Structure formats: structure tokens, C-alpha cells
Length: 148
Image 1 (cartoon, rainbow, N blue to C red):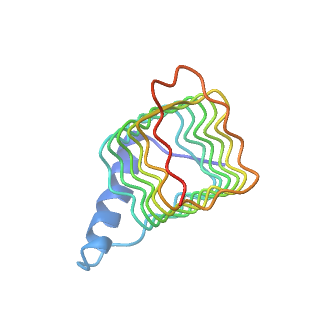
Image 2 (cartoon, helix red, strand yellow; image 1 turned 90 degrees about the vertical axis):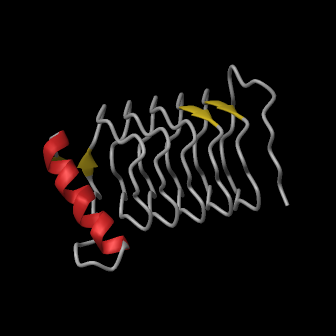
């Protein structure tokens, strides 16, 4: 597994931002990368490759991972308040014990995603793909889950 410093990660994120804006740059490929405990608050990771990335304990509040591939990613004990996973591929991701207030999972693929003991409230589960998903929540204050 690759390890990055916050500075190295910032360079990749800058290149990704330019790629998203069609101004050169390159797509963020962070697969098999150790991103534990790094600050990714508010970053734009739309369409990024985070396959098997280790994001345990990372700060991801307000991060946008829409259309990202985060299959098998580890979000154990990560803080994901107000994060977006619209149309993201979260198959087999580990979100156990993650803190998730107002997370948007619109049309996300949650096949076998593990939410054991996650703190999830006010989340948007509109049109998600849910199959064999483990959802055992703790400290949830009025979770609003809509399945259509």
C-alpha cells in the first residue's frame, strides 16, 4: 500500500481539480493508498479512483466523492459529515464506526457496504443500490432513510 504525505496528496488533488475542469491535470488515482488520518475536508474527489484506499480516521467532511470508485475502501472511524457519494461505487466499502451527519448516498451502489456502528443521521438514501449491506447504527438521531 502506498503512503502519501499531506503535501503529496495536495499535489494530486490540485491535478485532479484541473482535470475535472478540463484544464489539463490528471485524474486522482489513489487506489491502494494509505490516507489514514489525513485531512480531506471539502476536497473534490468526483470521479476519483479510491479502490482499496485506506481512509480510516480521515477527515472527509464536505468532501465530494460523487461518481468515484471507492470499492473496498476503508472508512473505519472516518468523519464524513456532509460528504457526497452521489452515483459512487461503494461496493464492499467499510464504513464501520464512521461519523456521518447529512451524507448524500443518492443512487450510490452500497452492495455489501458495512455500516456497523456508524453514526448516521439525516442521510439521503434516495434510490441507492442496496444488497447484502450491513447497517447496524448507533447514536442515530432520527435517521431519515428513503428507499425508492
